[in-house]
Length: 369
Image 1 (cartoon, rainbow, N blue to C red):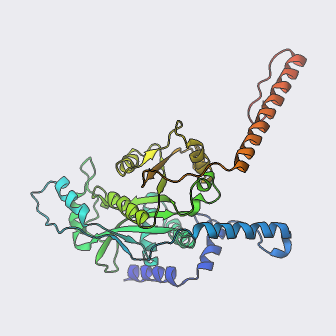
Image 2 (cartoon, rainbow, N blue to C red; image 1 turned 90 degrees about the horizontal axis):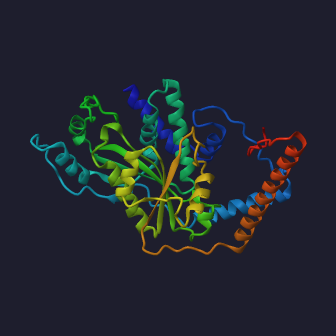
Image 3 (cartoon, rainbow, N blue to C red; image 1 turned 45 degrees about the vertical axis):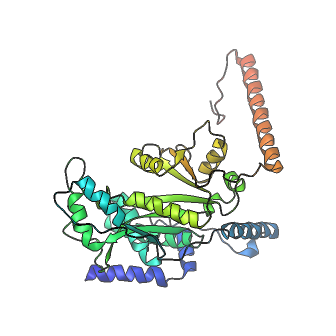
């Protein structure tokens, strides 16, 4: 009963709290609950030209994301397609193939935030109780903050009566079961079992070269693809990716993009089967993808030494691309000229050092010996 009351209190807090409160909290608290210093936003201390530039930027941002109209909360994207019977004689592969068609995919509502936050928390299972509480609260705030930018979550769910059988059959490759069939994770009495989620958004493309070269409202970014450990091997992730395609097609999206850890072979295989491909160094738009990846701080080594692939999927045969703007070409050439000039200056400095001391002095990229 205490657990039910606590979860209901959390759900009510997610729905009832003002979104402005969430934005303030999201900016004042780090991902793990640590306080952050927030600069003053008082316009009296801000020069007028800076204020005007910020206002212009915000208007441009809202104009960009306005081309994407999020779907209505709770909209069904994929319905359950068939009824199955738990025949013990069926192999696990046959059973889960039938289970996959039973998984429905719908647009999340604010009431799903707790489940989505808990799912993302499952990745960090070694958190202390206090840290888990802070992470869950922070994750709900981030979900609401991103929803205000047009982000949409999709959730996969199945009839709760099938849950225990699925978990009983779903074993690790080494044969050790999950040990979770005896108790449900959701004591609220819902008729459906939450299995996984994925997030779709467009605001990541704003201000990037990739975003400038494509028409607003034609790109969709996919992130946070996650499935409960005890619900894996059921096809839930595949159904979520199909749900993304359904949503994108209905909204006139031309291309989908996502990032994946280079070492996550299971995820890479999932995305390749869903029609995505890795943007390689020889790809015509590799530089656009690299700039986009860097803007999201996902470039090589940026996140605890991890590297990521950028993958894309086109939903139409000939996506619309804009020619590079003349200003962008000029800026790029200017940057290249500056880099060349700096390289020449460093070589001249090295030559001067050699002449004065009799041998070469190695000069690294950061100017230190």
